[in-house]
Image (tube, rainbow, N blue to C red):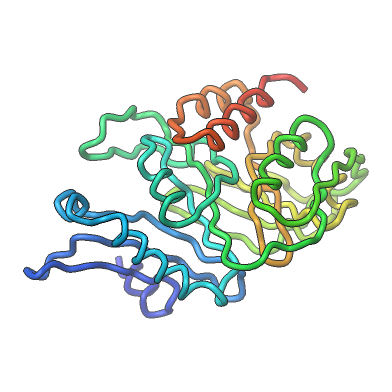
Length: 291
């Protein structure tokens, strides 16, 4: 209660809507802003079926061109988690928001019921997508060597920017990861943490109480990538995508100790186009329950 009002008052949530002549809302989208960060997040976009059937492609494009133009210069990227229960949302994001697929989140939502859509009650996967609003950084991206690094490099190449350098894993010794900024979404039971370095081995790696545990590992420090990736693999985490940034990109890792279950969940996703299908297929292939 009061959560939306607090977000509106603080300026963290921008709600953009359209009303018809009777004063009824017929379209809405939400954008989350994070002070001090170089990105905004796109929420669910909805259009009433009667309004959608009347809108032309040019109207959709004009609306999003306006939104993206206002965001450009304020943030470097617009990120989103796109439904894999149907392909329409993914087509829309690519066509009108210039969004590129960047990864996935396994079992992103659980227990949701969607009215008017014949979908399984099983957890939904998310296709992560990003819209670039700033020039790509020419800095090199350091990725863990091996099949996962190759999968990540393919995603990076699609995003443009600096070259990818594969670095072999290195034992971290008596150390563990140190985390900085942390986001908690209680509704989704999702925790997102950013790695800032290596520290005391006694620190807990897994996020307590998180159903979806995501860790962002920066790719600008080859030593941190070599040691951090080894720690994350050993802790039951797997790479699930790339989060591009204006100054530095991060590889997103998700705690998935049961690889067989994660693979089965990802295989249920409905993905729209060749790039997204290749992204999911490559992840599923590498997620076979082997060391």
